[in-house]
Length: 308
Image 1 (spheres, rainbow, N blue to C red):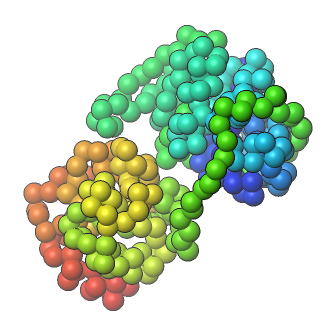
Image 2: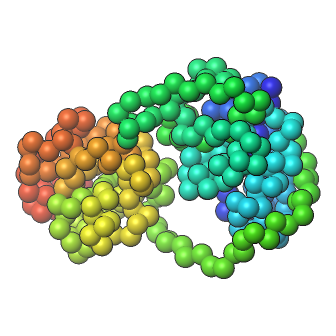
């Protein structure tokens, strides 16, 4: 059996979630290939080729897939799917958009957001916002899978795979790229940061989020938020951590003014160390926190930042 991992990248660098997905693939099968589709992305192919456990990289360097639209990448993946028993991608926006389409084209069921591999056809995935785990067995000849990156270690370097060109099938012309708005920040990317400082409705306003940003800058941390804070307009949508946002598992997660709704916990409860700051000592967040501080965040955060 051989697995194909569809790489998520920006035509320059591999996204860290791809490394976690390769680790999951290596638990499934003995041989792993990586599909890199993009434009002027040869450097990405070379990066993928030196990941430990990668046998070869299929490189489709074509302007028509520069923006990696699901309609085009799925057709590319299906064109080589017959050679693979498993097709995998990260359970990110990229993978969640792409893999269901591939599954539909192959007429198989997609297995989403796996966190454990029990055997080549049996997986564990969270359900009910992470409050229960489902063991899923697929009888399909080809398994189409998305992988929760935080559940698997990143694959290391040291490999010596070869890079092979892969032609793009006829263009699908089902969708076209119009524009992309990127949020740029000097802070670490939220899903790969070692430390995350998140704020909730209790922060009170967008201006008050500056207290969290000052603390994050001291710690070299990313800034996150609960859905309540995002819905209130305090921060952009891409800050959201939770069931309908991003799933993170940093070494340190600091939750400020977050009550701990089940949907938020689903996105951060796998963090190595959780620190909660909240004035309500009955807040559910304290049930999962390793350290809890009951008090007024508006006096605690400046003191903490000054101490650091």
